[in-house]
Image 1: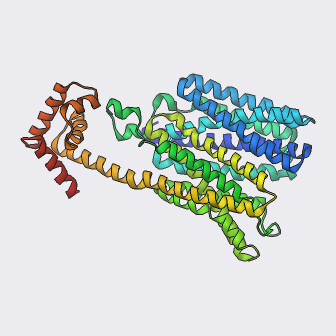
Image 2: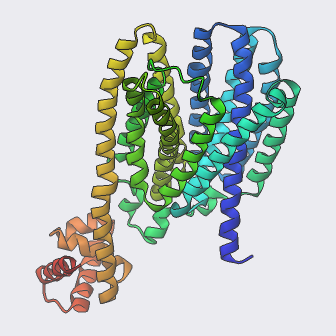
Image 3: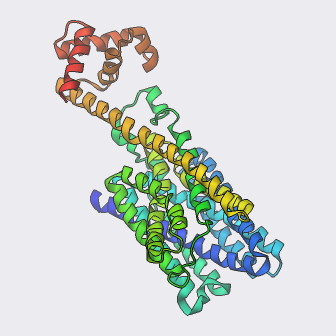
Length: 465
């Protein structure tokens, strides 16, 4: 198998793992949800599933991130396989018993297991798939699993979505996931990250974190609030469209949105973030157009299409961060903080559901904050990041033109900034004499007599670019 075939094969494996794992989780979830619905009231259903169930997934994702940060690849794979087996084992008592306590206890444990397993496919997405293909791999796999979930719930009146048949379907999907985990390229050992593609020999301080200061925290808070607003928006009072649209049609539009979002993301990440921001406006438009007939239906369809962009955005942003930074455990943070936002949104809806006006007002305030955070994140990634990328390209071209070595390339921008030899030595963890040696080489290669001439030459080169 040549290199191109190997890369393509890896993408297919990752996409299949995403498909099988998501389908496994959604199939078991809906089976468990239907049992909970039969055993308790509507208000309690949302709390037990959308709050406690999602918090259980958050716990599973958190455990995965901790394990990923400290365990080697072989041990991590073993833990993922155990979690997949445990998920199927727990599904039986979670969906077959008649007592609510047993259903909830085993159901929450089941969600912890699937949260852990989902973390692994996010790890593979960041560690095994290049940036320019992640969107298509993730979006197409999620879209296919969404449509497959609809087929499972539709065939034979839903016979595959409950009871022993559902348990059999989940066992097959779990076996598929385990087989893929065993043959997957090792994301932790290979570490084929974007940061390595960008820089082969980082300095000690550069290798600590390739991400700009504060951007990770900003992204986490943004994902939480955006997910919260998106979840709360679904509870807005709106026109009843049940006579025109249904769940199957919703999944179709959502699946198309996922597929399109993945393709768009691989061409331009910024468009996905912008359309994610637009998706937050949809509930407000639905509220404003209540009673408008065809206009409401169009906005509803656009809403589910844009929901696909929202899903892809919150996954890819952290997959990109993980690959760029080299700390691959970060890859699961998008789903983790998204779930936290979903939980908070559900809590707000349950608390304010009896007062629609208050719900809309609170969500409007949170929407304004989310929009501002999205703008700040957009600016940090696509505006300031583009400027930093331009500077990096200029440094690379200048170094290539004048034949600078790796160490000389590291020292050059610090010389241009006007730092002393001692300051440069401290920043690069080398001796001052080493800095002087490479600085002299830079002057000789560029034909300059002083540091000031080197700085002037570099600035002139940058201006011409």
